[in-house]
Length: 219
Ligand code: E4P
Image (cartoon, rainbow, N blue to C red; front, top):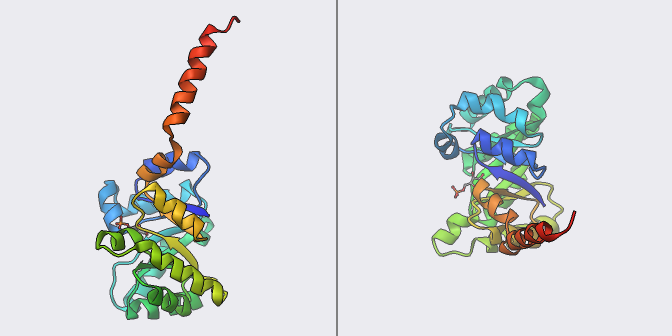
């Protein structure tokens, strides 16, 4: 399973990329606002840090405006990084129209704010490169989020649908394991959760014991 980082924090992206585990990045307006960087700074730097799909979200609501905004974003990225530009489009009827146009023009899209298997199916039919079901937000309202990943994976396998599934709105490391067990293509994971995935108390205790014992070894 590919791992994307779900953040616009450039320092975090740089650090996690150095671990050799990142396959892409997803951002959204909330994450950019939280990062403290301007959108211009983010788009200038982010493509230099990770060589994989980088999702940037449009904020227009009508299809023609979304398409215009998407094309402007693509044009603002230096040619050598353009293959990685992915336009995040919200899951609405207008969003589907925009996805259809952008996919026909060879621009990658990530349909975001997906909360049901039906929405994922429609996004895929419109030509989305990726769909992002938000499982944590479903858990938050008392609906088992991972259930829709199971449904989407089953449907996409049944019909050989090429659209890749990005499990999004991940809240804890178990979500990542469940996504991988269900065969999801990608999990987009906040930096704090990636850090939790690295550590284990037994690893720390084991390192401490080895280092303590090493001091007793005659050299
Ligand atoms: C995905 O692309 C979104 O940026 C993200 O996963 C949203 O997660 P949240 O529900 O924690 O805001």
